[in-house]
Image (cartoon, rainbow, N blue to C red):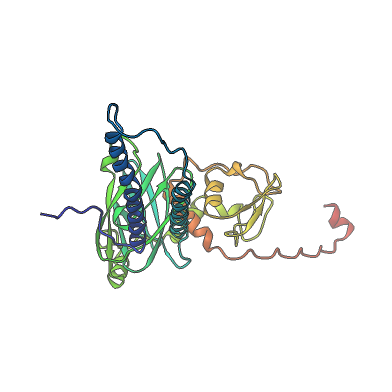
Length: 333
């Protein structure tokens, strides 16, 4: 009879904090709005036109009352703001040891890729009790990855990597929704998160997702294949060359640009350099690299970036070989 849930099941470490904040806001709204509504009704009835009441001594000010209804709500609002700001920062800072999974939103499905190469469509397998970081991008329009039971969602936009993280606390299956109207079939863009025990998840992952291809190449291996396919090493070897700067040891470092600025070589920069190479030029180089925006899919860009992250440190340039002694005749040849 009373099976009428007011909120989804709580299944992540954020759910309790989110529900607490929601409960506090609900209680404060009731505490401050109900008395006002009741007093408004009482005064409207008591002082209605034609009613015989004493209107000879109207009150124009009451300093204590005004300070009370100003300071108390102010302190409560500041407390709520502080708590919600902390919760927001926690939501936006994934732990360094979080397991990374990649998500591509497209009209109208969610494509998931695990680092070992296992791919899923509209399903996301994760282990319980392990922090999971989603690196997301859209290949068409703006979407929003939303898991109600985890109380988490974030925008998935074209040409930009966004991140969302969570830690599931219960095994089971939960809904994935798109929380941003993204086209005529927006309502069909649904999926599910499947939370497993860590050992079950590792077995599922080792089996290649069971129903998926058992010998999928890892993201790094696929990225290396693309690196060779497009002959990237011709210009981007283990040392800087006149054709292009080295990519070895590049990730996480700052690059000097031709316009004098410096840019951090993160996922966003590497993606832009792959797809729109002329946007940011490394100091000392001109725009000779073609844009691969029309050739590489978002999935391939993620794979190439995964491979570039594994490239080691840049090798020191080999010392120039001493010039061989030549006779005048040899030098004229």
